[in-house]
Image 1 (cartoon, rainbow, N blue to C red):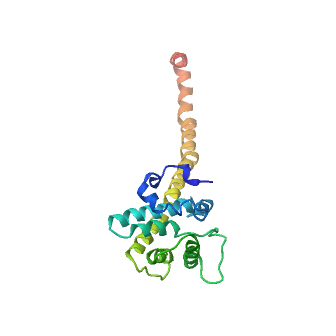
Image 2: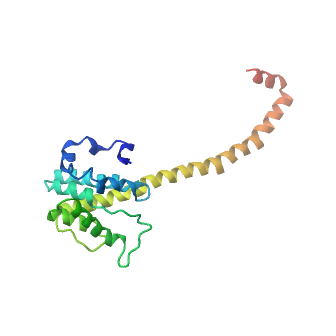
Image 3: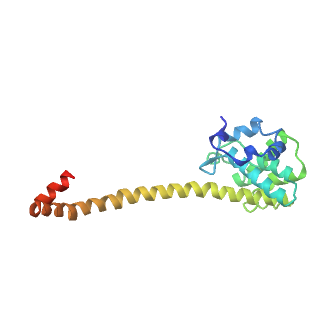
Length: 205
């Protein structure tokens, strides 16, 4: 199942970017990421592409090693388990999954020092692994920014929809009912009683 077909993404039409990851992007190690949920509302494949692509754009603008950024960004979360169900005898998901991703990436392709550093240290600030290269800083900050937006944007929409439903069901509907019962209904009764012809004309119109 290719979850990237559900919408249009900017990297799909960027030939320069796609050329940098051409030898790994169709490997099952990458495509299988689409089977796993990421940050509650998204999936790991889209998240990995997003981190890879936007980090690549920034690195290119800064004249950094954008090839390593694009490739390592795509492989930075190369693990295959549900974060809510996985437990570790030592450490936690934050500290362990970079090492799991690194081992899988090393099976997938040869890594240079920058790519190695990006993958193993992309959880800096959540771990003590300080990046050694500016490229690693780019990926870790893009990763954190995107993770935050992936959490908050759908959550804010759900919150907004729930508020609208609540207001409609618990406030406006009862308010309309109260207005009808206490104001309009008595008014209509009085109008029919004292102005019967006017009431009949309104019905005809």
